[in-house]
Structures are given as C-alpha cells and as structure tokens.
Length: 132
Image (tube, rainbow, N blue to C red; front, top):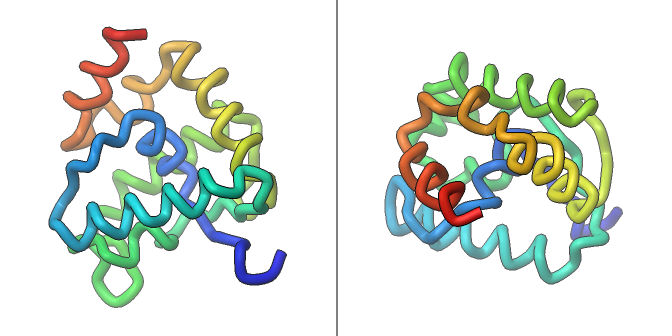
C-alpha cells in the first residue's frame, strides 16, 4: 500500500465521473484536480472507501475540523453508492475497479440522480449524462 494508498468517500466516485474543474473554491478545485491526477496516474493503486471525510475533503470549505458540515446528506450519498456497488464501508479495492463499478452500476444503470440529485452540482452531471 505505502504512500500511494488513499482514502475516498464512496460518493466521490460519482463526482469523478463528470468533474469539470468547478468547485467550492480555487483551492478546492486545484486539490480535487491533483487528487484525480494522482489516482488516474496509477489506477491499480488501492483505495479504502470510507463514509467520512477523505483526501478530497481536505480543501473543502464544508470540512470543519475534519468533519463535514453537510454530513447527513453526503453520508446518505456514500451509503447509497456502497449499496449500489455491492461494497462495504472500509472496503479496500483498486481505484480502477471502483471507478468501473460506479460507472456500470450507477452511471450506466441511470441511478445517479436517485442517489445525489439534490447535490448542488447536479446540473453538471445532468448535462454530461445527456451526452452519454
């Protein structure tokens, strides 16, 4: 595992599908882009899925002392992703396998909007889904 191992909130697997460089702040978008580049550079690296703040959350303005102030909503997203993907909190899998599973079981299965349709970034995903 070593230094490449990363902890991810399950719902971020959906965010990564349609991310286009928009976010809460410049610091957040720069960090999100860097996290995605690190993961995509080594898709075989292991990630641990965690229903709690993760590496992406580090620069999020909703992260208050390591806890998400939007936690009830994003926890619901995380749990729904785990159920849809047949995974458990704490699962350790490759980034590639996780992204393929999210794509096939949520995005391609048209379940994304049911999971996170009340997200403030929903319009971005809806626009991308129209192109699929």
